[in-house]
Image 1: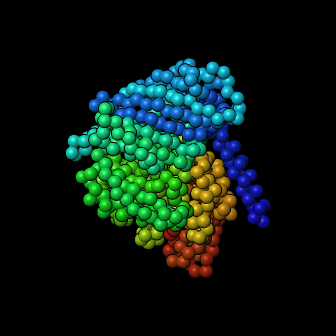
Image 2: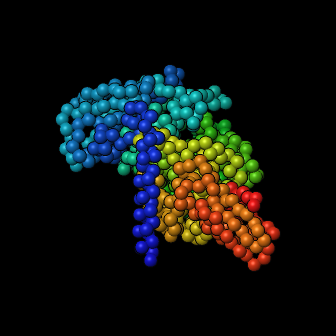
Image 3: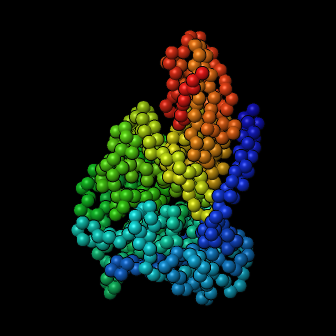
Length: 553
């Protein structure tokens, strides 16, 4: 029976995604060539598989300039001689070397076409070295706008950071700027800065080299695991380091904290939140995905971001979201939003990564949902429910959560709170907390260090839940409509049906009739439930993200 059920679910999901293919094509019709070059798997990308980056970059704070190289190692999946490398204006590639040869290259907007002297054969490993420099885009509102942040700390020291989610890592370094292909062997990052400054990046610090003649130091960092491009970051400042060891599911995890020297005392108190966060998320999601590369929090001059193994923090060493409770319930002040939320991305966003930006909900919905799981683990289930339900006040329902594919576009910011409430609702529908936790842990095991599509995530959840949830995903991810239960009470009869739903939507719903729990399965047709006593009270369980409306006879 289980095998037959899974086949049925797979068929239904396959049919559903074919149905939406035409819709997605129409949404992306207005995209221009640059959008498509940035957001699609072009022929100039698909013939080679990324193996490793070695980014070497020097920062010149006084001039707000950068200069560097990137050694791009790759394997050929087929023969090819034309490679797409992305680097956004006004930065410029100045040379490309392949062995001892200088390769020809041509710019088209934010794309460079690299021409090999002769086609490379299928099945070989090779590399090129890209030289680049210039005055990068300066971020106007990090982390929501990409680029470099050049600022000073309160003591007058340079305080510099990179951000690039959405706009892409090619805003500050040349790379294969698409989510589908992560470097299998990770990335090396060598950062040259004025000798009085410290550069912090992803992974582990391997060595520091000082060049007195140039008054500079080079900090060599290394990531051994696959990493998405936007998770690569560099932070520069008057940093000091402290840390601890966390005994977790994967053994001993190094947890390091890099903060400005004059903030160390505050950080030592506030960052006690970090091991509590890892403990909660290992319970819900499984082993921390990057034991080899360690975990660290790094203070930055903006709110924070989920850079893999280098979570950045700028929440003022206080609980809440800049001291505010996003849920309006008071629960959000029980934890440091940035430590919890951005660390949650280590599982959803960094371990499991989207292939296309249209599927950003995989990163943000699960991580939004992780906030209330943290609350449930450390406080109570009721407070967790209060929190996630309270965040509904932030939902706009302005546009669908899933955007057009192939053009580097993400959907509505509702992917946070609405996506989190969708997952909370699905948990209620499954109605088995043990199974739900196994699904969350199973996702991180099944898609360990992988890039995924929405279809894969939806299919996995439906199969492991043992029910077809495709219409639920369609409703919340692909429309702006919230299901509305219309009902009429006549003595002992409850007449009900759904409005504002996609065709075929029939999500089970837990309600209370005369104070007692009762399950109903509404659809678009009116149904009747007759109970033993006259119905005095009726309410929909608040944990389901639906509206309800009594209808007059």
